[in-house]
Image (tube, rainbow, N blue to C red):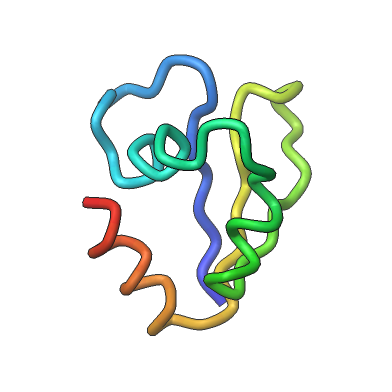
Amino acid sequence: MIRRQYENLRPLRPHTYFSNFVNTIEDKDLVSELKKYNATLGKCKKGGYAYNVKWHDEKLYMLFVLRHS
C-alpha cells in the first residue's frame, strides 16, 4: 500500500500530478474517481487542508501519476 498526502488549498508546487487530477475532475466526486485507480481517501488531521490517499495497487498508482503528470 502506498500512502500519500496532498495539500488541498495552496500546494507548494502548483502543478503537481494530483492538482492536475483535481482540476480535471471538476464537479465530479473525488472518491468515485479515485476508486477507478483502486485508491481510497483517508481522514486528515489538519482540518481538511490536505487529502490523505491510500493507493492499494502500485501499478495503478504509477498509471495515475503518468496520466496526470
